[in-house]
Amino acid sequence: MAEKAPKVGQASNHKGGPYQQKEQALWQSIHDKDGKKNHLAIFTNTETGQVRYFWQDKSGNLLPKDGALQEFTIPEFETVKRTFADGLNALKGNK
Picture 1: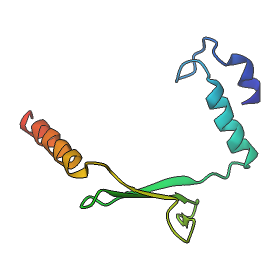
Picture 2 (picture 1 turned 180 degrees about the vertical axis):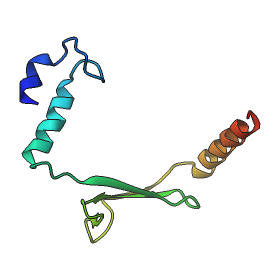
Picture 3 (picture 1 turned 90 degrees about the horizontal axis):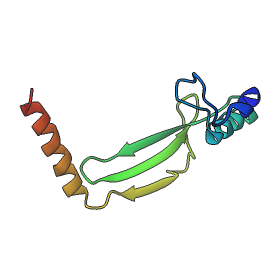
């Protein structure tokens, strides 16, 4: 990506439009880690609205092993859940 640095913000046929500085930074960080990157695994309890997320390594192991990176409950979860259900039901009715 270093050779792409002069192309930041310039017109190009790049699928996502002109290269962006943040895109350069992302690829540089991946390069700095020798291509070793983790994935974010997000779990949502659909009964309670509790959300937990972890990093997941290439083998599927959740990191850190001693618990979630972060946990929170979606505010007004019952309202959000009902709104989504109503929207999905409306889509089913339009087919």
